Amino acid sequence: MTGRWTYRVSAAGVLLLAAAAFTLSYDALHQLALDSRVRPALAWLWPVVIDGTIVVALLTVLAAKRAATRAAYPWALAGLFSLASVAFNIAHAPDRPVAQLVFAMAPVALVLTTHLLMQQVGWRRPRSGHTDPMPVLQAGQEPAHPHTSGDQPAPALARSDRGAHLGARARVRAAYETRVAAGQTPTGAGLARAAGVSERYGQRLLAEFTADPARAGHPNGDRPAGDRPAHRDSHEHVERR
Image (spheres, rainbow, N blue to C red):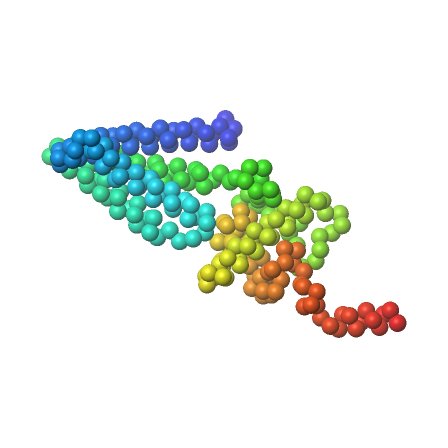
């Protein structure tokens, strides 16, 4: 079985288990809402609010991870509603330890399978032809010729490789400038996740931008014309003479 089919089968299995866990937890919470005299026409909304909040909070954690931002609030929300779902399921169960354990397993399985699905989604990176005209590098992959010294690519460098290098550098630069403008301290790992490059490449560019901020605004690493040393012009003038 190929890697693609392995991913599809495992993802389908996780979705099936998550749906089963949600259904079992939904039934218990729905019955508890009816027993608590919630209107029958609205009782179905209560389990959706409880378990639905868990799923949405965990998906928000995934979005925050891709954006390389903090996710303390979504994690706290997911944990709080997970505990509430387990407690309500146990409250609906018969007054026997085994029965309470049976009812508690459904919300626990829902949380774990949703988190597992998040991890599988995180393993899949968008392809270059779908979301970004610039080539998107896989995690752990660097441009074919990652120049960080400020020199122009060699003449023999293929146009596609140069485009991949400049596109990756531009994404890292944009992530770096966004964090600096927000008053945050950029990290190589955070820039790598935001730009879709390897952590080592993100750290190399971070060190370059930090050492010489003037070059961070130029995708190919060149300095502005006005920032070049004056002695170079005088030296060229002497050579012409």
